[in-house]
Image (tube, rainbow, N blue to C red):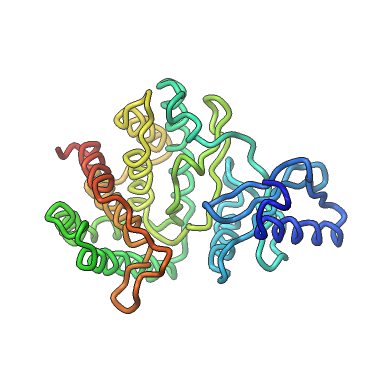
Length: 315
């Protein structure tokens, strides 16, 4: 997207250029188009002391996304394959290093099994490394509050939307109620709740990095592994089976640390599936759904649940 495409892109360019005029070490790259991230934010490319960086300009009226991403970048500051926070002085933007690579979605129809298996093995190692960076004990209450809120919102969606009120979806909720405690008793970590192929960048068979960390929140290693399981189950690749990619992810994780129990991972995958239904708390009993909310296709969601269970050995 170049300036003039839409007013939001124009504002993103204007903010970046105003900042660059006051901070001479930055130069906005007018030759490089801006692009969307997270379906709505704008990313403007720039140079900083000869290094490629991006201005990520956040779309929403509150500052939650920006603050969560800034916190995540600081938390993972020593982690390879993640952006490095450069400057946080802009009111609605962050400046971070640019990671070179193309999204893994580019391989959905064209990638070969060997390449994809190699990338997912590297993803497993990176995510395991991220999960080993500890959070403080003070984050325990936040992780449990998020889990309880997710459960309440899932039941609300189950009751409010007939497509998700069937026995298949009720069994999923009962499974979570029965086994959630096990996963929540595992070590804390800062979970990337938006890990998906669109946010994973690679160059050929080499993992470049993971971007778009605005959804990071306190959780446990079981939750993080369950989110990765969801990414495998929800985003199929034409030339590589989910089993191949999940086994590769587990191999990469196991090279760094022990995998959580399969039941705990399965339950957290189900939790993530429901988060896509209630949109991280949009469907609640105390407020109507916003006008922009569109429920996902229930048949696709049911297929993701089946795929998740099959990968965990429960057919």
